[in-house]
Image 1 (tube, protein in one colour):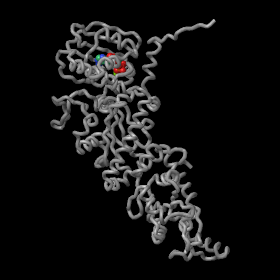
Image 2 (cartoon, protein in one colour; image 1 turned 120 degrees about the horizontal axis):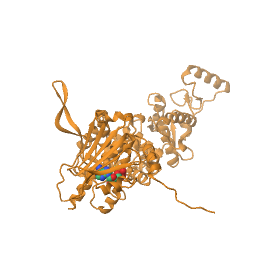
Image 3 (cartoon, rainbow, N blue to C red; image 1 turned 90 degrees about the vertical axis):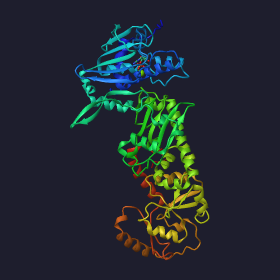
Image 4 (cartoon, rainbow, N blue to C red; image 1 turned 120 degrees about the vertical axis):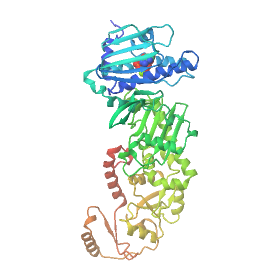
Length: 567
Ligand code: ADP
Ligand code: MG
């Protein structure tokens, strides 16, 4: 006999799971409760805008207060409040959110709402042994309601006295979490998660020094900037505004100014705002990562965006804000989320657009910035095919004279003079101007051009360019004998016996202990050809493989390059 049935899910079994496992981080309880208060405030504004609420709005702010004796943190708002019926619907029934209903009803002119899932409120039980809701709805003649719950599935609900519209959420902090009764801790959490919320968040009074003591002033301590720069229209903003905002975001960056920035402002097919700054990227990728802050409707989500935006974009700084970025979920969920993927490829496109625009409109400035941009662009080209296709148009090659060329321009420059017997173009490069000085000079004497490839990723980039550019090879000036590669008819060869060659090789190796670790050959073919009697060369291929392997080990610290570039 087949038995069919339905698995019963009751709050009795789901509640502890929510409390324990939904959030990896206890501290987000404050973000959740404050963002509910902000939502309630936005809702009353929307109702008032539409004439559905005709009363006084009053001062619309959210207050967070700490009471150490009573061990409580209270979050109070003057939002729409809840009737007893609404508490029963939205609080007692787990996972029911009013956010979607509200947005459906007021799609066109609703102020942005943060809530989604109807689970945020319960995060308060992670740190509290009792939570009270005291709420009075904006609806006329509805009595205020008080709801209490100690974290078990039982709650009590009763009428209460409350004059003003709005909600107080009282969290009775568990002894285990008494850190959340410290002023500094709460303030730092508010700064972290709520710094750009759209409704003023007040936490105590501003402090000032008086007679050597820090005392409270009359002025409210407002935590947040309700209208952050990225939410403003780019047309009205000046360079100074962007630079000031950068300093606000990264107070520790001292005098480092960003080179330029992109103001993201998309309505369709998803909503995305933000500002991405291009920092001067130095030869230390590690230090510069994870400076992008991710927001959802001005609520801070995370600053570790790896896996959420393409690897190379984690080198940028700034803010990305999208209501389509889910708030309450794990990283692995974020990574698989379709909206997040769309957002990420949109950003890649915008970054490429910006670089192309700079290159086209202000080539000189673009060249000046190239050295600081190069690592970022190379990284992007190596790890993102689409970005490669875009960047191949504005990427520059710099030669040892300090001149810059696009790939096309460089091809035109050397295709007449630097080809091998198959007609492949040979791009000569050096990786260290001092060490390879004599080889560079020798190449120049012969009328060749030498590129400077001394960046952290250049060995990989050169490999990539060989794959992508047609009939083009890169050869370091001290690799093999360039005259053997670049076809020249008048190579003179000095004839030596095997014995003579052996003796000479032996002598030279003995003189050069420093390079004995690397394989090298002493090339006799060029003897007598130039002013240099003998050349010591390393094979391009084996040298490069070694460099790439070494680089790969280093790269393990800051992310992976795709397999194709691994040795
Ligand atoms: P979400 O915010 O995702 O909707 P929550 O669990 O955070 O889910 O909250 C559930 C519901 O409780 C909200 O949708 C809202 O209707 C109601 N609510 C919570 N806090 C408040 C508040 N301060 N004022 C009014 N309603 C609130
Ligand atoms: Mg919520």
